[in-house]
Image (cartoon, rainbow, N blue to C red; front, side):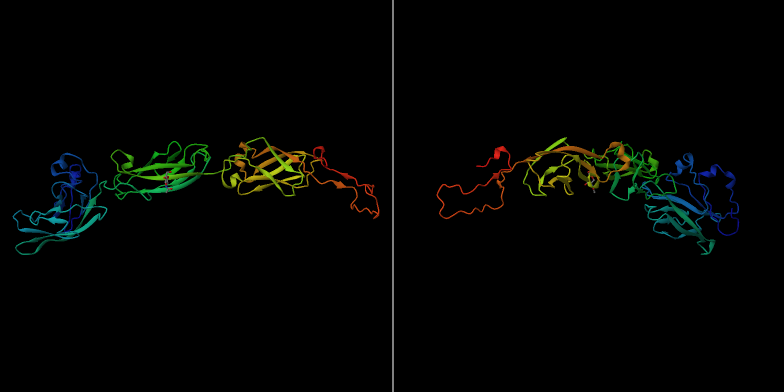
Length: 418
Ligand SMILES: *[C@@H]1O[C@H](CO)[C@@H](O)[C@H](O)[C@H]1NC(C)=O
């Protein structure tokens, strides 16, 4: 305790009752007395709640956002020199003196004239002195003290975004981090729980969870499939007072999209396809398209078609249309109905970007049987001599046999020479 002859301030709180030995400011000539703290009235303050703020020198505490009927009582300036005869005058200067903080110059009582917002200004520095009205002399030298504005929970947690957008791969393991959401609270983080935020999930279970402390959103179900459901709208709440009842809260929305992984092999919808081609079809002629289905997207659905086996592997080609992921069957060698009129091909569709993690779901290819029927064409007869030049005498008689040509029809019997 300061015992020098300079002005000392003493505030006593309810702790007065607990530490009576501190209560003998014999040599203290002037002190401040905070009779009402944390919004309790004078009468309540004695009987009820004891503030555990501790013993503080030169500080007053004042409740922010006080909405009681009267002006809020801050405390009292007092000096031993005050005989109660009205001879002394208390003077207050500094932050807000005369406007926010009004002193009764006779009694030394200080009141707050307005509502104060801690989030605007949390600390006021003031100076006090006492002068003799008759002589105008200071009976106490000026001394500084502080009024601290005490926090109440008047700010709800606010998220940094109204809506968050996030992605997570489908089939991610339980507990995979998706995104972190953050809420802030303007109340005093160093006092009480007014700024202590706890996160909870209001919508989005059982698919997702949120860490109550960090606001990290994680997957909560194994094997979530994009092909089953792609979009989730999750609602997260941040509540202060450590999440207790009576806390203030704010919410935010998180749009989560499952991204694709290659967890689906291509599959032909039918086991057999049939095509036909004129035997005369020029090389490169397209005979038709086949398509294996793959529910994945992008490169995870990319397919390469090939002829794996069959009696026509050298006669046909299959090429892949990269835009539609279809296989196009084309003629590679000249067909001949008379030589072979039906081919059987084993065609394969293979994923080009398989993911080893999902090989247990494989194989990531499929095959189908493709039958190609070759159709006959009415071909011109073929003469057995290249040029039918027969020399005839000019005087030959009508009806005479002048020679013989032999023609063969390469077509089958139904295309007889007429
Ligand atoms: C979030 O998801 C909802 C519902 O699916 C949708 O209506 C909204 O447009 C999405 N918002 C954004 C920014 O993507």
